[in-house]
Amino acid sequence: AACTVRLAVAKALKVQGKRYVQKKDKEGIDDEEFASATLAANAVIAALRQDSSWEVVRRACAQALAALRSASNSQHTSVLVGALEDKDADVHVAALEVFCELAAEDGNTDPAEDIASFLKQAVIASDPRPAGAALRCLGRMCAFKHHQVVEQCFTHSDVEVRRWAIWCAGCLSTCRPDDELHALVATIADVMSDDISGVVRKAAVLCLCKLGAPGHALAERVASTLRTDVDEFVRAEAAEALGDMGEEGQGQHAALEAALSSDASRHVRIAAANALAGFGEAAAQ
Image 1 (cartoon, rainbow, N blue to C red):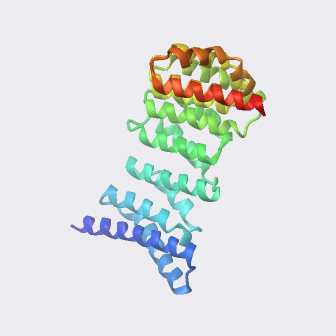
Image 2 (cartoon, rainbow, N blue to C red):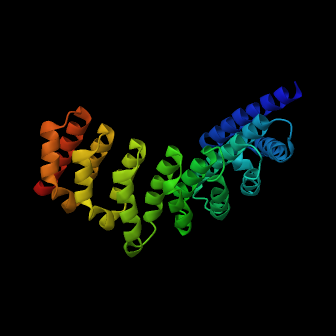
Image 3 (cartoon, rainbow, N blue to C red):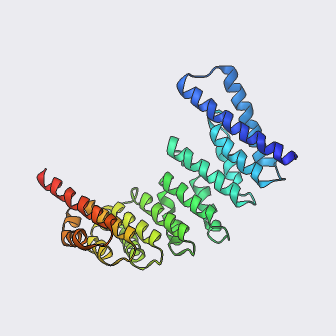
């Protein structure tokens, strides 16, 4: 019963935090309201550090801290890093989701080193969800210094980990010079052709497009995927990617025309039509 009460309190504090942030953004807040939110944040931090009876309470506290972070900026990073040492995977995922929000909203990249270290351990754990969450964080943070630990996840046994690793690598590539990307491009192209999961192959197609000139140079490989992949959504992604690859994509117009006229999937035909239309608009301009 006591655990249930603590869980209810944590959830209530999360709601209070959301209301606090909304009012702060729209109307502003007075000193008393800020003091109240700060006390709530401190209570959540204490529970996240100390509650040992029930994992769900700590998970709820991590989520509540996200809502109350405006009143706890001085402490949230160290507390959430500490949560990565928790024994429960749900707490790890909750803390990492908060890091993702912080990175998206205020560009906070301070904990990237800690998250990369956590990822090295998470990839050998039985529950793959924390590893996927860590990869999402590193991608949001554009933590390009940690690209090697990300690329080691390309061969992970879990589909979602591989998918998020590919996505993350694409995000990190935007901060790396082209001359560092050629080996990555070759690896991603092999994943696009060989991975057993259509979800991962689709992510690889999108990643090649993100890799800029080095990735666009393999437009012919993308066209081959458009012609031969058994998954219609992978083929549709390939058609869209060719439409975004500029001159290299235009050089594969025959593959797009063939997909438009004969592919069995309407998703692929629509994507091919859009790509070809884009080429026409570019030529007109």
